[in-house]
Image 1 (spheres, rainbow, N blue to C red):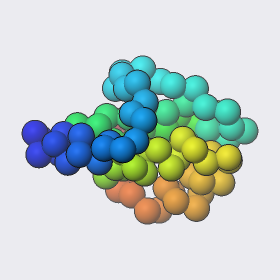
Image 2 (cartoon, one colour):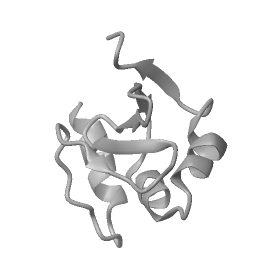
Image 3 (cartoon, helix red, strand yellow):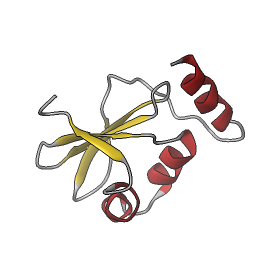
Image 4 (cartoon, rainbow, N blue to C red):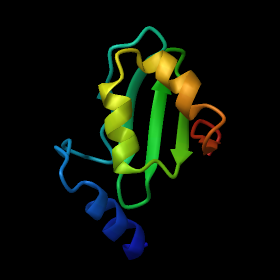
Length: 94
Protein backbone atom coordinates (compact mmCIF):
# COMPACT_ATOMS: atom_id res chain seq x y z
CA UNK A 1 0.00 0.00 0.00
CA UNK A 2 2.80 2.41 0.92
CA UNK A 3 4.49 1.75 -2.44
CA UNK A 4 1.46 3.07 -4.36
CA UNK A 5 1.45 6.25 -2.28
CA UNK A 6 5.15 6.84 -2.96
CA UNK A 7 4.67 6.29 -6.68
CA UNK A 8 1.65 8.59 -6.70
CA UNK A 9 3.50 11.28 -4.72
CA UNK A 10 6.43 11.14 -7.17
CA UNK A 11 4.05 11.58 -10.10
CA UNK A 12 2.74 14.88 -8.71
CA UNK A 13 6.20 16.42 -9.16
CA UNK A 14 5.93 19.45 -11.41
CA UNK A 15 2.13 19.50 -11.33
CA UNK A 16 -0.34 21.52 -9.31
CA UNK A 17 -1.80 18.93 -6.96
CA UNK A 18 -5.55 19.33 -6.53
CA UNK A 19 -6.89 19.30 -3.00
CA UNK A 20 -7.81 15.69 -2.34
CA UNK A 21 -10.30 14.35 0.15
CA UNK A 22 -10.96 10.69 -0.71
CA UNK A 23 -14.41 10.82 0.92
CA UNK A 24 -15.64 14.02 -0.73
CA UNK A 25 -17.30 14.03 -4.13
CA UNK A 26 -16.16 16.98 -6.25
CA UNK A 27 -18.70 18.23 -8.82
CA UNK A 28 -17.73 18.49 -12.49
CA UNK A 29 -19.32 20.41 -15.35
CA UNK A 30 -20.67 17.75 -17.62
CA UNK A 31 -23.96 16.63 -19.15
CA UNK A 32 -23.02 13.01 -18.41
CA UNK A 33 -20.88 12.98 -15.25
CA UNK A 34 -21.89 14.52 -11.91
CA UNK A 35 -18.79 14.28 -9.70
CA UNK A 36 -15.53 12.50 -8.99
CA UNK A 37 -13.30 11.64 -6.05
CA UNK A 38 -9.74 10.39 -6.09
CA UNK A 39 -7.69 8.22 -3.75
CA UNK A 40 -3.99 8.80 -4.53
CA UNK A 41 -2.80 6.06 -2.18
CA UNK A 42 -4.77 3.40 -4.06
CA UNK A 43 -4.95 5.14 -7.46
CA UNK A 44 -8.77 4.92 -7.47
CA UNK A 45 -10.80 7.34 -9.54
CA UNK A 46 -14.46 7.17 -8.52
CA UNK A 47 -17.01 8.71 -10.85
CA UNK A 48 -20.64 9.53 -10.09
CA UNK A 49 -22.89 9.78 -13.12
CA UNK A 50 -25.91 12.02 -13.57
CA UNK A 51 -28.15 8.92 -13.38
CA UNK A 52 -26.85 8.17 -9.85
CA UNK A 53 -24.53 5.30 -10.78
CA UNK A 54 -21.14 5.31 -9.07
CA UNK A 55 -18.15 3.45 -10.47
CA UNK A 56 -14.55 3.01 -9.32
CA UNK A 57 -11.73 2.90 -11.87
CA UNK A 58 -8.52 1.33 -10.58
CA UNK A 59 -5.01 2.37 -11.60
CA UNK A 60 -5.63 6.03 -12.40
CA UNK A 61 -2.35 7.87 -11.89
CA UNK A 62 -2.13 11.49 -10.75
CA UNK A 63 -1.07 12.51 -14.26
CA UNK A 64 -4.15 10.76 -15.65
CA UNK A 65 -6.35 12.58 -13.13
CA UNK A 66 -4.84 15.90 -14.19
CA UNK A 67 -5.58 15.10 -17.85
CA UNK A 68 -9.17 14.19 -16.93
CA UNK A 69 -9.64 17.43 -14.99
CA UNK A 70 -8.22 19.51 -17.86
CA UNK A 71 -10.43 17.85 -20.50
CA UNK A 72 -12.90 20.32 -22.05
CA UNK A 73 -15.54 17.55 -22.20
CA UNK A 74 -15.45 15.16 -19.25
CA UNK A 75 -18.07 12.89 -20.87
CA UNK A 76 -16.12 12.52 -24.12
CA UNK A 77 -12.92 11.98 -22.17
CA UNK A 78 -14.64 9.29 -20.10
CA UNK A 79 -15.85 7.39 -23.17
CA UNK A 80 -12.52 7.65 -24.98
CA UNK A 81 -10.04 7.14 -22.13
CA UNK A 82 -11.71 5.58 -19.08
CA UNK A 83 -14.58 3.27 -20.00
CA UNK A 84 -13.14 -0.11 -20.94
CA UNK A 85 -9.54 0.95 -20.17
CA UNK A 86 -9.48 0.36 -16.40
CA UNK A 87 -10.51 -2.41 -14.06
CA UNK A 88 -13.81 -1.13 -12.70
CA UNK A 89 -16.20 -1.77 -9.85
CA UNK A 90 -19.83 -0.77 -9.45
CA UNK A 91 -19.88 1.06 -6.09
CA UNK A 92 -23.66 0.77 -5.84
CA UNK A 93 -23.29 -3.02 -5.67
CA UNK A 94 -20.26 -3.08 -3.36
